[in-house]
Each structure stands twice: as structure tokens, then as C-alpha cells.
Length: 425
Image 1: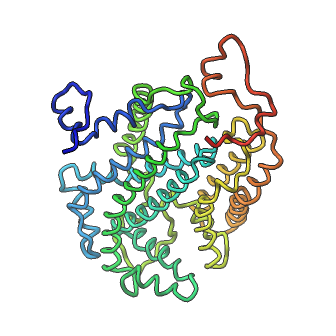
Image 2: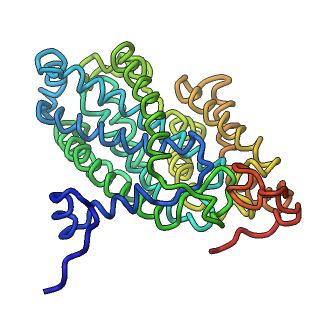
Image 3: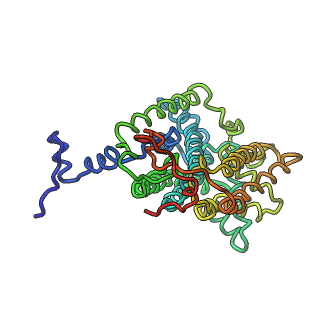
């Protein structure tokens, strides 16, 4: 028989488990002594916050599913029963309802950090692409979850969004019928969406696990956008970053609690307090706030197929972002031309969110088309051109140099070194 794995833990129970299944040693290696760049700022908290929010959403969702009835005649009333009669049902539902918004909020900030600091560049291309898959799974899960309360906005939102697939040539209407499970949004649709909404978070959790594995293989990027070169460039993950993440988590939970306990309906739509009525169309059919920029892109093209194509392209373009950005420098700190463009991109996304929340008329139509055009220009034209025209600032010699200061003098690398490609180590 093969010898047991040797464990150094003093606790006999932990040592007994660890010699047979070295899970504690693995955790110590990956989250205790794991070397991490010493110059992380608070933008690096949002990955951990996203994971915590996912766990909260899964836990509350499981308990909500125990009391929910996925039937068009019972769904709306079952949600009201959860709110009124189930012990702490109101807390579960408000946490789950606002947790979706919190989840997208921290993920969008996490993505912005990737844009700003070039976290999608070599050798982290696959890590970034897995992150885009996570975003797509989040969107699918959130859309299906929004249908479950079976209010007016749930019903009509499901009708409008699923009808978009009818724009696909030849097979479009067949796809819509398959999604509905019939010839209209009805009980089979609700059952399918409930099943998938329950299942997809577990798939999402598995993809997040792959994301973390890929991160631990390539190592984390950092605000300077340069690779680790010396032992002085890193710190053990624990206790330094567990404490820093804990501070960020406390602030995040306070904000989360404010929404849950004081303004739980601020991010929702009042029409969803009205039971679904297929015979009465709401005056405005508006998705949740985190879908509004993509909804605005969809409406910026008068042609249905063109709008659907642009909407999906706005996300799919992120898959090829590592190859569209041709600059050899990662961080926007050292890219004076790139920096203003990234903030213009953020402003255009906020503007698209405002456009998506208003009727497509007047100035909103023009603004939506301009911002949509800039969104695609940023990725398809500006980034490749900047890589050729931009002259980056000098990069520091190492991560530790700006943090600890050079021993006995010294300074950053010569200006010419910034133009060299990133090392592929």
C-alpha cells in the first residue's frame, strides 16, 4: 500500500484528514502562503466580493425555491406568501433580489479594473475569456430569475427578450417556440426558466472555480502591470490580503444591508407588483438596470436582426480583447493616451444605461447611436491604433521598487525600456 501523505498540522483531527485528503495543505498553499504582488489596491477586492455575493445568492435561492411554486396560476401568490407568511421570507427575498444588483455591480467594477490595468493581456488571455463566460452565465441566470415573480414586467420582459431570437434567419421562430415550450410565454416557459435559474448558478460556480484555478496558475496582475521578478515583489496572501479583503467586505456588506433593510425596491420596477396580464401591455417595458446598456445597443439599430447582432457582438467582442489591444504595456498608469479613452468608454456605457431607461425617441435615439458607435470604435479601431501610436511612460524596474524604494538610490527603467514587449516568462 502506498504511504500516506505527511502532514505537519498539530491538531490530530486535521492531521488525520490531511494525511488522507490534503485539503488543508492545499488551502494553505493556495490561500495562505500563495505569493501575491505587494502593491494591490482596493480594486483587487472585487473578485472576492463577487465570490461572496455568488454564495449569498445561491444560499438564499435554495431556501426561496423551497417555498416557490413555478406555475402561472400560483407563482405571483407564492412570492407574496414568502414575503408575508414564511419565517424571514422577506429577508431571504430582499437579499436575493438586491443581491443580483450587488453581484452585477461588483462584477462590472471588476471588469473595469481589468480594462484599466490590462489584466486581459498575456499570459492571462484564457483567464479573461473564462471571466467573459461568467458574465454571460450571470446574464442568463439573472434574466430567467427576473421572470419568476410573474409580475407584469416579468411576463412582458420574457416575451420581448425571447422574441429577439426570432430575428435569426431560418431557425429563429423555431428557437423561440422551443424556449417558450409552446406558442406563447406560459406555464411551460415558467417551468423551464425556474429549472434553469436553479441549475445555472451551480454551473456558474464551477466556471468560477476554473477562473480561480487559472488565476493561481498565471498569477495576479497588479496596478503596475509588470510581472513578479524578485521575492521582494510579493507577500503571502494571508494575513495581508485576507485582512484587506475583510475590510472591503465589511464596507460592501454595509452598502448591501442599506439596500436590503431601507430601500429594497429602489433597483426594481413597480410594475412587477402587478400580477402578469397577457392582455395588458405596460406603457414601458424596461429590463433591470444592469441590462440597460445592452438594451440601448439593441434599440440603436432600426433593423431587428442588426440590433440583436450588435447586442450579442457587444459582449462577444470582449473575447478577442487581448488581441485587439496591441500595446506592449498593460497598466493605464503608463499609457497617457489610453487613459482618457477608457474613461470615455465608461461614460458612454453610463449614457447607454440612461438611453435604455428612456423611450427610443428624440435626443435619446441620437445619443444611443453615438455611444454605440463609440463602444465598437473603442475596441475595434482605437485600441489597435493606440498600440502603434502611443509612447508609454517608463516602467518601474520591479513591483517592489515604487513600494519600498530603491536601496541606495536608483530609479525607474530608462524610457526606451517601456517600448519593449512584455516578458513571456
